[in-house]
Figure 1 (cartoon, helix red, strand yellow):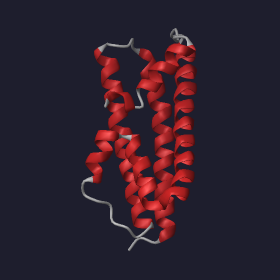
Figure 2 (cartoon, helix red, strand yellow):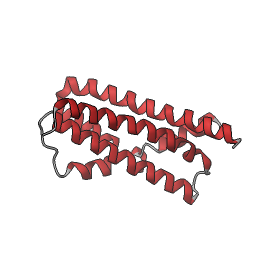
Figure 3 (tube, rainbow, N blue to C red):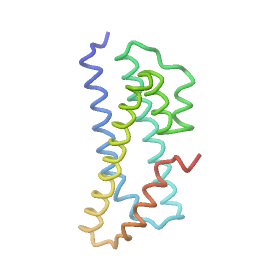
Amino acid sequence: MIRPFDLTRQKRTTILVAFVFSAAIGPLDLLWKDGTLQSHLVSFLDLLVTCVLIHIWCYYDSLDRSESLQKWFRWVVFVLGPIALLIYLFRTRGPRRGLVATVRAVGLFAAFFLTMIVSGEAVTGLLGIGVPDFATMFVKASLRTHILNI
């Protein structure tokens, strides 16, 4: 049996892995022009890992709350991505606490986004690779959230 402290640690570890992944994917996201095969592969990898991390976090959270995660939920995560997390938060916490958890989750996604931009600029700056302007990076990173891929 997993103790509640271990579940909290697992959820925090999942968030830490998401930060590390954001830092790693940032430079890769900026290396290739939009529309190239490499750009599409990086976007797909980003989408896949993001969905897996959301599912892992929801799994540990459901164990922490002594609730079962529905079998269909994993497919919802891979179809809706971050929207599935918001559905999960409202379903498990109710309207008021779900809204608070949603605001926290959006804040985390913003922090992941910022981590991606900073790491991308740092690495491309160190390597001397021309970085696109900020507006282009913002649009490219926004599209990568996969909500528009539905």
